[in-house]
Image 1 (cartoon, rainbow, N blue to C red):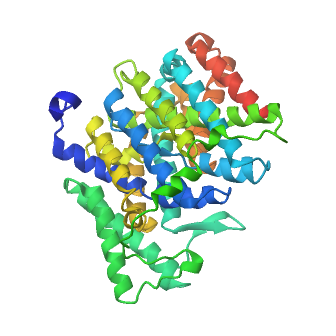
Image 2: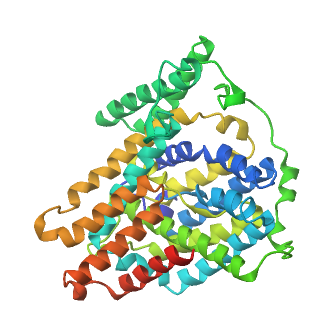
Image 3: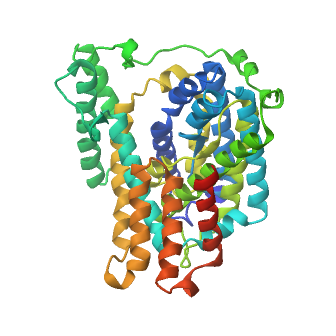
Length: 454
């Protein structure tokens, strides 16, 4: 039955590999179950309600991806977009969180329309091969950077912006977590080189288990006041009645003090970031998985984008920020995931996590960091597909700018934006105008206008 539904043999995979890949994807994404409630609670939303909404929205979106597109991509509340809702729209502009959720809902409806009219598909197809490969490479650096931060190996520095952690200061918390992340990275790398099935998942669980042993031995000392919690999973049930505090609240909006122009700006801010984060993730992960055809197109792009759009609107109704395709899906792809069975496995785990959320949220960030770092390398390896020589500088330089922008500006969409603008401008000046797809001109203009007005 699974083979018939998900075409496993046709995609040269099997149920065991797909399920393992789905579990791997979930394990690398599980942090969102702790992070999203924490961020959105700053906007005045109930953390438990946000957790339940996040689980349900992730299940709906990822299941849609599985059955509509038969692709191994998972969806959940997008990082960055949740921070934009809480810190910019609510705390910055002073708008109620209900207004922000309504903006997310409208954005999702717009996306559904764009997906049905093939606008998003046309954008995907218009992006040249060089930029598609650059997006994959850039995402590799981006998620590796996230992994280094999650491990607290990479920390803020007032002089150089970032620097490496001091292992001796606060060794029982920061230092040991960073060290465990390094150990986990080497273990994961060796297991992957040895071609052990489920290497990335084993790396996550192994790093977590080592951390638990360190806590039992007194090497790791929990410090909840500073964000270092017990690594031992707790067994408790979730209060499901809390969902009523956010469900449908996007339609219970008081527009007093909310200017229509500002509201439109908020909608389009969500729209721009979500559109190009999603496109960037689909481009990067599908490129690495070898899912693009000979023309650089993703055959199932339309249902994939539609699933993403449906998840966004559903998530807003449930009570969470923009639900989007997660770059951590690349962990499952790296573990062998090629079909919707991978996505369905992840979706089911999100649903189950509603019952045992405390267990899943106990997965420490230093345990998932090695997976992100290794997957980052696997995506970065696409750089060999870029022809970086004098004959191709007009396409190579925009690709390079796209790559470095993603980790340095901490945004997939900013990387695409800068890549598109530079690709068009350099092409025009170097008399390559006829080689540029007309849609690329439109995108370049829109990106420039975004920087001016948004």
